[in-house]
Image 1 (tube, rainbow, N blue to C red):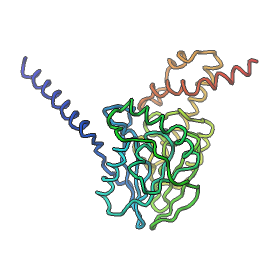
Image 2 (spheres, rainbow, N blue to C red):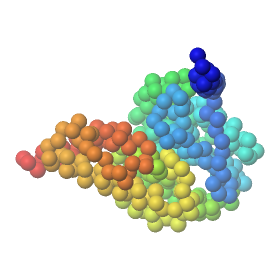
Image 3 (spheres, rainbow, N blue to C red):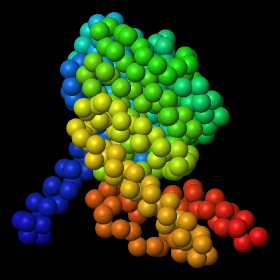
Image 4 (cartoon, rainbow, N blue to C red):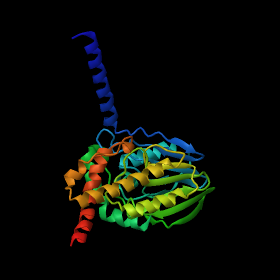
Length: 313
Ligand SMILES: [Zn+2]
């Protein structure tokens, strides 16, 4: 074996060993990124769930107020929730005042158990959705990310959040109730700092997901978000942004998806044929475009087919 080959082999072995150690410790390596005064985000990967990422594909965050810390979403697992708590404790000695859950998808609430004893707020629809689907989501994530999920259970929110203003520890927080990504989507606008936590109403540079989507409602919600006076946008997935391009990107993809599925259904294409359609270059910079489009066909195409079917009859 020549020296170059040996070096390459050594590098590969080293990389594998490093990965094995990290994965073996089940350490998400959460780093709080400061995005505004008192406001921090743990930015997740723009990937699919895998053992390699332990389900850390999501953005969670927190606001430090003089009355305690407001946590936004708890991540995909009990381990994540616990590690989030210690990462928060490395930033502030304030205790956690409350948790808000943006919606019922598994990467956003399965860390709840780590916050047991703290009020966990969700919209009533979200609480209902967790009751109905939470355990199934947890089982599914165990299959996808394995031991990262140890000890994780679907833990119900303990408080129902209502839309409106909450004045807490020097922060003027607005709880916003929407739908479209799911039947209950909370967004949180901190009027004091201008930070908007959009949950999965906004995906940025990562293709959106549609297992519970209603495209018309989602488009209307994005119009409402557009009117909010935010300065910093924390999307549910993808990088933080300081302008509104993520919103227009979402709207154009949703409109394109709607038109494409409608046309395909009218043409009588099958699901597989629809999945094979060419995807516009303009969306190519969003990660997971092909995969998420195929999934959206599975989620949404039957309803387009049934609409066309009705018209024929
Ligand atoms: Zn979601």
